[in-house]
Length: 210
Image (cartoon, rainbow, N blue to C red; front, side, top):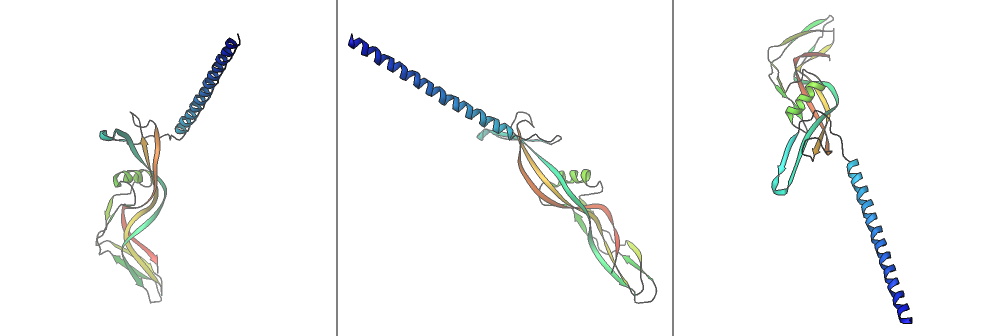
């Protein structure tokens, strides 16, 4: 009887040990599930909603099993009018009465759209809609354009011939979409600051006090 009693005790101990082992494994699995759930939630929280109206391009590398959609967005931060000087003249009046100065252009010079980051055609479209419809990709000054201005007694004026333009500060945002359709699971992959000098269609003389 003693032998049977001890046998039952040992059997009960083994069953108790198995129950404790199953409980420990269950606790570990619950912890892993909780960790995975938190990690997944964090990943979705980092997703960014893509702006509307983006022009998406599809990129695929089958040998690497990699494909995604990509799109760029230009955001104009600030713009200031400026003047691109092709040539400059000055007239001094050493008399006691007002004189008239006449300036005539003699230089032909071409000014193109300059930029530091991005694609010129896409940036140009953004500038014409956000800054001024007068912006162009290229403007050339012409010769033979004249302008007159009064010069005060014992004074001086400066005539500058050139192109009206804008100095622009902008941001280029690049978005990536890992989805069957563009825009899904979207994230901002890169944001770069850029500057641009954008000529307009307007050329002419401006006169400044000397």
